[in-house]
Image 1 (spheres, rainbow, N blue to C red):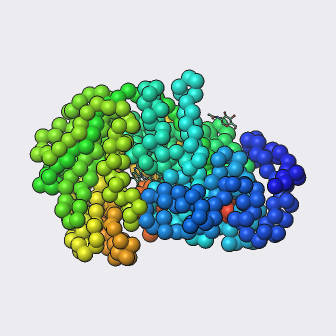
Image 2: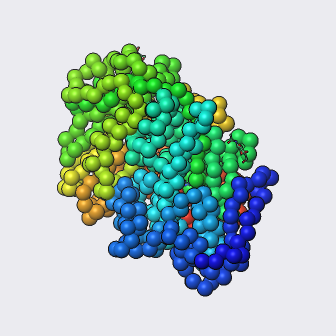
Length: 515
Ligand SMILES: Cc1cc2nc3c(=O)[nH]c(=O)nc-3n(C[C@H](O)[C@H](O)[C@H](O)COP(=O)(O)OP(=O)(O)OC[C@H]3O[C@@H](n4cnc5c(N)ncnc54)[C@H](O)[C@@H]3O)c2cc1C
Ligand SMILES: *[C@@H]1O[C@H](CO)[C@@H](O)[C@H](O)[C@H]1NC(C)=O
Ligand SMILES: *[C@@H]1O[C@H](CO)[C@@H](O)[C@H](O)[C@H]1NC(C)=O
């Protein structure tokens, strides 16, 4: 391969210096694209050994495809999968794809993926297009003063937390070890530590991001500050983030585990969640995920309970533990022990199957949570013919005291700063065995959420926030950020991506105009 005409160019952007990107001359790229006729073969020319084409014969392609969480994402076959091993590779790939776009080679649409845990087809994969699989960007570096960790976007939490645990450090990240960094951090990110520190995105000190031009830039509070704020919730709309520099804090082992209870506790549990989700009395160390889980029609209550201090049975959870229980795993352990525990309980029953998320936000109304539970129960009954259906309704507190922490670190684009109420996030996680049941499950769950939303509105407890990381394909989380934030995102997009590469050529995920 000849890159003899390549030059090291320093791109001046947004009045700040970009990081040096080694990119070939644009004419070399154009002539290569013309000569080869496809984006995949041109990418193969510029990134030899890093482009994978064939499902049947290429292990790189197979492993990448099989490492998606859902069957829906696994069943999509890109024309090629690019597996960059450095930010510079990502820069080169985007440069080639943007050049193809400028030549109207519109078949060169692409998808951006980190760990691939979004369930819906096409969020991080693309049929017949180019998928950029970032999983090899898996750096985990702790600064010498233990204040900052540099995290490659392709990591899963299970690759990060053991390193931090060994140093008695932690970061604000995901709660399940096999979930990915890239998607979670760009969509918000709820952590066991969010009561203390807010969303994961609010604790990013610096983003290293590849823009449409191929430029690699830092976005932080002093350099590209608008882009910095836009990336806190902006998902895949502005560029490809290659590295997150995140704030670390001291953290030893803490108390937590899962508590399993009979469904006969339902009313008391819902009453507990309503009372627990109160900023006036919220204990910032407490974290709760309450799952109502129907396994082939039979419901059970499973709570993931964490208290980020080494204090067993803190009073805040006493009313829950006073109820009848089937089992619990409460203990004092390091962070990675809890994230592994949740992965071990959810992974084997969902990995590679048809999966679906949908979500809504309400105030912590006991009456609504109870009524929505009944709607879910009726939906599960109506789907009893679906093979091996696992339906989980999850309630998670989203109190003002949690989401208002964003202000202290410069704010994000989630739009929650418009509000002052306490909220509860309702999430449906639905998993089933056969793709032939996909259509009937989608239809039922979409109807369920339309009914749930109408009910919440009629009870005066509905909120327009739709958590992007839990949103179904038909939901509109960017709209839920509010018009001011959407307009701000569009402004930043025009600045960093004037040609609209990430709006037009990256169709997956939630886009600014339609999401
Ligand atoms: C079992 C399970 C547990 C979960 N637990 C939590 C939790 O504790 N807290 C929480 O907040 N959420 C949680 N989630 C939701 C999770 O945040 C989302 O599914 C998230 O999208 C996963 O990130 P990923 O990197 O695996 O996703 P991917 O599917 O790879 O990507 C998701 C979206 O982000 C875009 N994207 C990915 N990487 C980049 C990048 N580097 N630059 C630009 N765009 C990018 C993709 O294009 C895609 O549209 C969980 C999900 C599952 C399935
Ligand atoms: C912000 O970006 C600038 C320019 O790249 C860089 O010099 C600086 O170290 C960054 N700040 C942080 C906190 O990473
Ligand atoms: C409600 O929460 C408060 C504060 O945590 C607690 O003192 C009280 O016992 C709770 N009431 C019920 C009925 O759970």
